[in-house]
Image 1 (tube, helix red, strand yellow):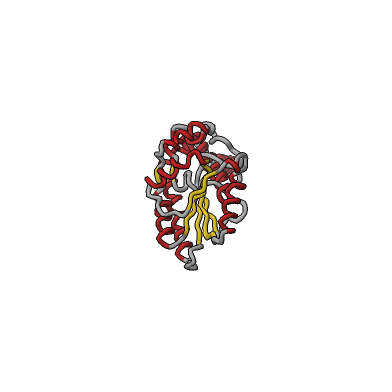
Image 2 (cartoon, rainbow, N blue to C red):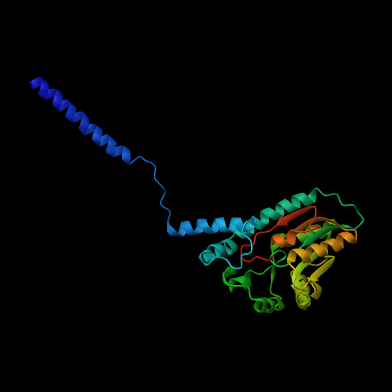
Length: 257
């Protein structure tokens, strides 16, 4: 009898320890990480910005309201400047390997807004692109001639001019902003470019791709060889005669079709 009771007690002890082990093992099962709301929102906005820069999100007219603080932090917190610096380093590496012909027909194209000149102070007042585009307000801003040079692009410009490239500045600004644009570029040190192209009345209603493609076609027709093309919008770089290489600068604040 005592022997049977001993076996029974042993079985109960084994079941007791198995139950404890099973309960402890449940705590070791993998589970989904709990992400804080702010982190989850930043993750979404990071993905949105990446999709925008890769041209996978098109035709967007405002920055998502939930991404206001993310875009603000990106633009003024240092990451935007670091991204621009890295891209211009790649451009300069490419430039250093080009052997110019010496005939004065080696060309380079630069955009104006948020390529040569920054509109960050204007867009701060427009909640970094969360507010809809306001043509009248933007025109008034341009006429103030307060855009500042983007330092890394200004250094690139200097290298291009000193190396012997003919630099053509092609902007979507219309002719009514011509003098303000020339003065602003000059005041920020952009001196020595070959020609500035502004959108004329004949291009009214045309997309930026169509307009800028036609300008580049004219330059190629004049015999220029376009070695490089830099802009903050895909519409600066798409279309015909885009150049030997194109370089896209980041801009999560607005989209130009």
